[in-house]
Amino acid sequence: MTTRSGPLRPALVARRAVLGGMIGVLALLALSGCAWPQSSAGSSGAPGAPDLHGSLVVDTEPFSQLTPGQCTDISANTVVYDTVDILDCGSPHGSEVYNTFTFPAGDYPSTAQLNSVGESRCGAAFDSGVPSWLTYIWFNPTEEEWAVGDRFVACLAIDANDRALSAPLATLASQRPFSRFDLGALAPALGVVLTATAGIVFVSFLAGYLLLAASLATLFRKTGIPSWKAWVPFLQTWTLLRLGGQSGNWVWLGLVPGGNVVSSVFVYIGMYRIGIAFRKDSGMLVLGMFLPFVWAIILGGRDEQYAPELLAMHGYPPPLEGYGSASRPAQF
Image 1: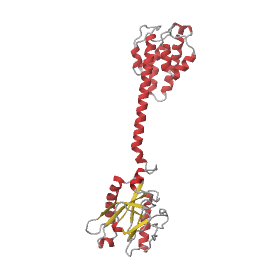
Image 2: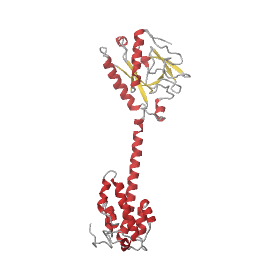
Image 3: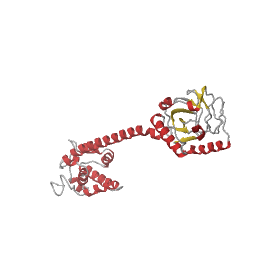
Image 4: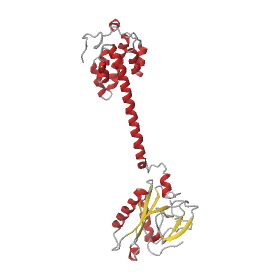
């Protein structure tokens, strides 16, 4: 284990607000001159650090020589020393380096400038190829390091829940787990599902409407009503109501929230009366309520006889359109 004599690099954590408190902890440690020791197994030993038990250490390198693709024991709770243990990416590790860059020569920037550049460079590289269910950290150079020419910055991907990573980033990306931190990754698939569902619903609705229109056209023709009225939205229901001796104005209640319930009641009353004119009992109405196209196909069948005079015999008013209406032929 190698410790450094100079100040510790502060770690900046992005994409997860709850980790922000770690910056303050690191600052206190730097002021007090204390640091969490790193073990030869690569664990930081810090509370809440990933469990790196069983990790395979393959090398030890200076922090300033880290390269993308290397896996380390560094996590959000780690204090960085001069050297870093490089772990086998197939064994538990705290992070993986996915981008590095070096600040240009010049005066030491302010903390805000350092953080702005780090967020921009590490964030852009993170978005372009790192699994989105992870988060990332980076380490700014201290003023003392800057003075001796060390302007190196490493961007490292870590688990958003401070757990040890078990595979390289490329493998993790292909084995993306479902996570509440990764709902955005589900958006494309969710969009496809919603689009497909909407398409199925629309096609089903259209097929149902055309089937009902075709069956009502047969019924209207048999009762002396022009069949084309069955194909026009709203006019279809308007005509059905009038065929059952009801006012067609009830159809407009379907445009009012909750009004379609009342409108349906009057449609069913009309269907019941139409059934009487075909010598059908209330059982036919039950069929019409659940399978209206079957109801219309049966009543419009070749062998069915339409007798609107039966309505008067049962005490109901005559139809307002078609055969038996008071104003024949009826006009809409």
